[in-house]
Length: 565
Image 1 (cartoon, rainbow, N blue to C red):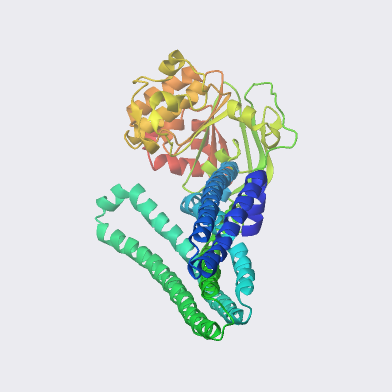
Image 2 (cartoon, rainbow, N blue to C red):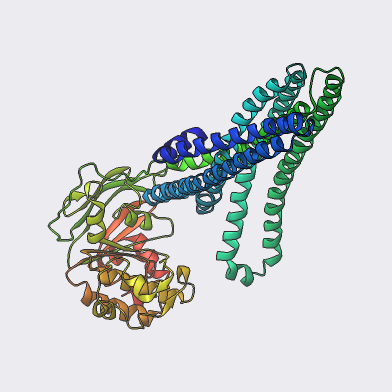
């Protein structure tokens, strides 16, 4: 998954990556050449007392060092830019895919997990790429080059490398294999911490109202402790990595000095060569340590890449039409024909053979007990999810064939829990019609346009949020208005005044209202009664009171017989 993700999103940056690899190659070659120059200065300059030789080769060492520094700076620059661009592209790809999701996919992943995947998971992959460009590219070059240069200094002494490199490789592999499942668990528990924290922030008022502070603190403590436990287990393995590597390094250094001293004593090796060999040994070990550091990051990045690919590979159940219908008669005629809807894996359908007709200039109301499928039925029209059976037609065209832009202009939904975005009243009202004039906004509103709105509209009351959401829809002026229990937070007087004002504004439009409050829908031109996902009655208020027992029970649960009449 990690390789596929990187191959897909790094393809546009092949030229910077090629330049980066070239710069890393040059700076590594320069690093490998320096110990040889140092050995020459010791053996031919210091031992012989040749100051001129020392100065000439010392100047050459300075020049090589400058080349190394310049190439290293360039490599880090291009590596950082490419890694940042990768992070930006992957975040953008996840965002675009999530925006295409229907309510079904959003419910499957959950908001906390999607947030973690878009932020922390992408960051882990981005950090791996950055480390790979700045460390891992040069590590194999330095390791192989160091071995070749060490062999050039003394072949018999290089036997130490035959023992060092395999021991390091096996040690690192054993540790990394145990880290991978821990990293998957860590990301899942990070999701849990985000979910608990999100619930506690959103439900702060409920927590205080029921004095559940202690319970919620304990819930967060458990989630935090679970994350800490797996982080500690991962940290212990990471802490074990470097002592193992350094132990091997120090033992091998002692072995090199021990055997090198015997080689010098027998005349088979010079002091400068031993110094250079030690430097190459350290370079080889540093290359292995860089690879070790990368291997520690790879398991977590692999897990994160799998989670990212899971989102990117998930297709929305609401698929845009291949050949969309881009024009309508704009009459606003809505018809639902034998619609069924079943959630994946559910034993029963939420909606069963539902039929509904809503005409321009009329108000159609939908009422039913909790869980009868009212909001689900309304969500089929703007394609929050698609019907699993039957059809939903707007002006005679199946909504699954409509162009999404045309759909947004024709149908507007005020949800049961309206959401306001951070900004001002004006920016929220223009959400459906960006070019709306101030006069249009004032026509739909009675308060200041520049009044600030906090994220989610938390600085206004529930009733104000509902009225602002309704005003946002009025600015858009669609042919079909869908109100999903959008008056529930209003008092009876405001509800009546608002419906009277809406009646004038939507006189030529199709209006569909879902409501629990009988007073809100009793004057509707047509009332559809739902019970357990089925239509059990259609008619006006008086007709249903006389003929439909389900409707009558709902009405009498709120009004007296005299009030209902």
